[in-house]
Length: 172
Image (cartoon, rainbow, N blue to C red; front, side, top):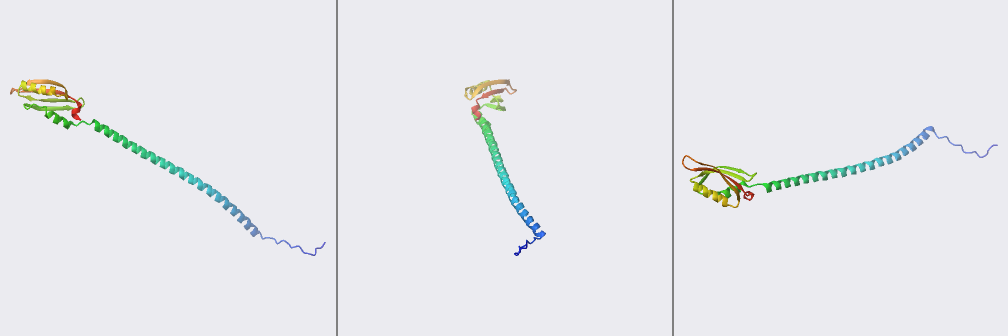
């Protein structure tokens, strides 16, 4: 049979156009996949960044907290030291009021550990030394008075040593 109406013949597409078509399609697919991969990595990087910022903030808060606690300890230690500090200068004004006018003190030792004062000196007579002992014994801030090392010097004066045990209030 012979056909009267000719059928259009298919034109053959050149090979280079086919290759270019498939290459374009594959390039578009690769770009779409790349978009989703890059989006995934971006979200993961943002999550990592947020967790790192949170960790830094917590570490910074802990560092500040430790610093504040350190200062608090220093203040407490200083407060304790200040409350335990003994003012030895107050003793001298206290002791000055207790000295007999005819007694001379030549040696002095102060121990804040047991609130003991050791003084050595010279008196004109035993009577004056006795008066000095009575002055010490009558003072309520002196807990205990010990007289020791009594001797008579070449000029007839009395050399002595007193151990005075004081109330801690004297040093506050």
